[in-house]
Image (cartoon, rainbow, N blue to C red; front, side):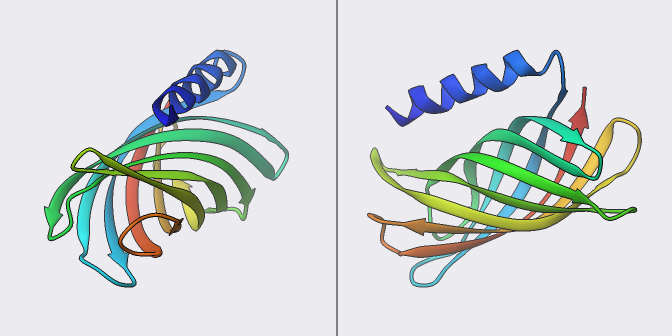
Length: 154
């Protein structure tokens, strides 16, 4: 069911992309749970950004897969984002829903994130972010993810 919701959200974002800024890219994520084992994941992210003046907003969907570490689960997130232009960088805040998949079992919860984003060129953006997942039914109640990534802006 959550896959259907994520797919519908992505389709909605893609429909808005013709009038706004669509982006896609990849990130490297280091997940550090408060109890349990750590993992490194690679995520593919697509989203749409809209804005008015210094304020921006948008939505993004992501799929993450285990790369290294003791834990082995895949992540899916659907997030709403807000940005504030500070000149050379933009401050970023996000909130949304998270799903972990491990050995056929799913766990769900919500996430909050803060970070910064900057334009490397006219079409490439770089991002650094901290994300906190609050999981209801996983082996750990909270996971803090440190993320670095690059995005292509269409």
